Length: 199
Length: 199
DNA sequence: CCCTGAATAGGCGATTTGCCTATGGCGTGG
DNA sequence: CCACGCCATAGGCAAATCGCCTATTCAGGG
Figure (spheres, rainbow over the protein chains, first blue to last red):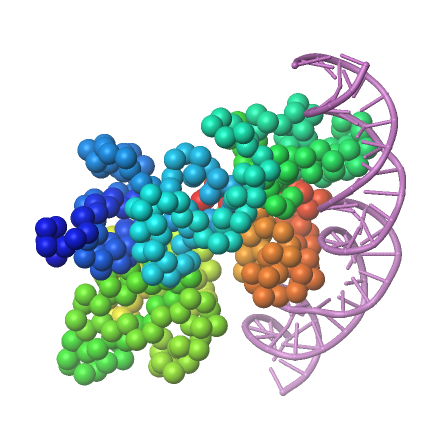
């Protein structure tokens, strides 16, 4: 298995990170089935992963395989420097294809995911600036966002701010457009989470 | 223990069910490492699982391995007839031990989980007001609640559960009525928080 | 000055909600 | 063994809301 010279392809060293040991086993088995892939470390947490990776310093390629099928996560992962984002419910051959794509210097996104993420990028970002989604909201939009995060309905928010529900609706639309939410449900969920994290 | 045959190495046939193919691969590899374990089928969904199992009729032992660290799920699973409930973040040897325990006719619960479940049973109903509102939801209602908490729309939930949006709406109404939410926005906020606190 | 972006809101068709009713399945207690 | 209740399913229908468009006003910046 370890014959780097006889095999034309360079040995690829892989560090796996997942909080479920059995999932780590699954990926280890899957990736080890490729002769030139070597899983050299696994980790169950971020600190562990950092410790494992600190000695594997060179230009590290990161492929995120997540159970979350939301554009937000993919965007966050890519902005944080990941080279790929895919769903856990894809088959084994897709995983290997994605690893190869990332190794080749590319970016991997599932077809449906890439459509959504690229759409969001095309309509929003001046690249290079790691903009916190909430920083691009106006004060009023932010206020509305926060109130949605407190579980208010659009009508209640309108009453509280003494404006028309229609105006709240426009703010809602702008928030969705600016941050890249497809549905209002997604936006509200993130608003609730945002309120949660600084309550 | 329905194998009176003195051969303690009797072949054990196993059907795996998980919605993540790679996870299935992981468990297949793990369990196949035991000589007398044979993974005879895998399934990605409940209907598939039922189809696969219908031909494996005899007294079926069910071991649930879940990502949810919640006593509630363990109770529901056991009440529904499962013989064991464990977390995904346990190591491989624990999985094999659990399978053996269930095969031997026992019930498997992780130490922390069993403490919590048994505790819940023991302190059955001293203080009535401290009842988690979620305990009074039916399984289906609970599922819908959880999905709202993940930021899905009613329509998306209907699609995912393969039921009519009208049915989701009825579940939503019942959740609101049972727990006492006045608006859907309130209910959704609590659902998001609930999902947040035990992700 | 003009142009952009923010805040406000009306219009309107499409969708969703809220509330009713209804049916079939399944368990429990008379 | 049957009645009753709970559950999951879903249709009907009016009212509310959403999604998308346009429009007005106003404050800053080039």
